[in-house]
Length: 359
Picture (spheres, rainbow, N blue to C red):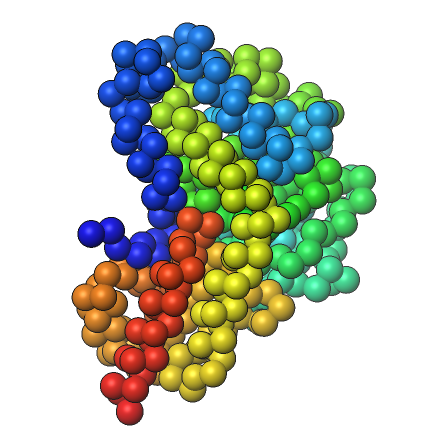
C-alpha cells in the first residue's frame, strides 16, 4: 500500500509517472534497453532530453533568450556555482536572508566574493519576507539572490522583487512549477529536482543568455554555464534517468492543464491545511499569513512531548515524513504538486482527531 508521503525531499512523485517508468524499465519504446543503460550521446536519450527541455519551456513560457541546463550538484552545489558563474569583474553580490537555505547560499557565496546582506528577517525569526522598501541593494552588484521558498521555515515570496538592472537570481528548488511565474523577471532560476520535478541528482538551471560571460576563471568546465549550454548540458555525463523522470513529470503537468491548473490545486490544498491550523488553538504556525508557503507547512503542537505520539499515529494512518526539520522542530507537511488532495484531507482529519483525543 502506498502511503501519503509528506517528505520535504526527496519527495512524492505522481503515481502515473511511476507506473509509466515501471512499464518502461526494461525496454524503453522498443529500444531493448532501460533508460538507465542508454548512452547520453545516443539518439534515444538525446530525444528524451530534447523533449524534456521543450516541455519545460512550454510549462514556464521560457523566453528564447534563456538557456535551460540539466546539471548535477543539487541546489547546495549551485549555491557555489552561481557566484562562480556571475562574479567575474564584480566585487559584491546582494543576498536577501530569509532562513536556512538563504544562509547556506550566503556561506557559499562568501568563498568567491563579497556578500552584502541586503535585507534579513532574522529579527522576526525568519517568519516573513523582508519588505521590499527595506532592502539596501548595491547599485552595481553582480546579482541579487533570493530563496523564493524556504523549505524549512515555510516562508514563500508572494511577489517577484524588482531589482532594476541587476540580475535577480532565485533558488526555486521547492517552488518551481507550483505557481505561474514570469521567467523574464529573473536573470537566473535554479533548483534541485527532488521536490516538484523528479528524483534527486538533477539540478535545473534557467539562465539568460547575456549572463553567460561572467564566470570566474577558476570555474570548472562541468559547472561552467556557458560551456554546458554550448554542449546542450552534455559536456559530461548528465543524470540521465533523473532527466527522463523529469520529462515524464513535465508531460503529467501538461496533461493536467499546465502550471496555472496545478497552482489552483495547490492553493486549495494549502487552504485546507492552513484553515485547520487557524481554527485550532492546539496547533500553531508562526509564519506571517501573506508569506506562508503553499509547498511546506510547518506547525507545532502545544507540548514537544506530543510530537512522537503524533508521528506514530500519523504513520498508523499511512502518513509519513511529517517530522519537522531539526533546525525548527515540530512538524512539517510538504504538499508539493504530486501530493493529492486526498493526502491533505487525510492529514487534516487526523489532526482534528488527535487534538480531540488530547482534550
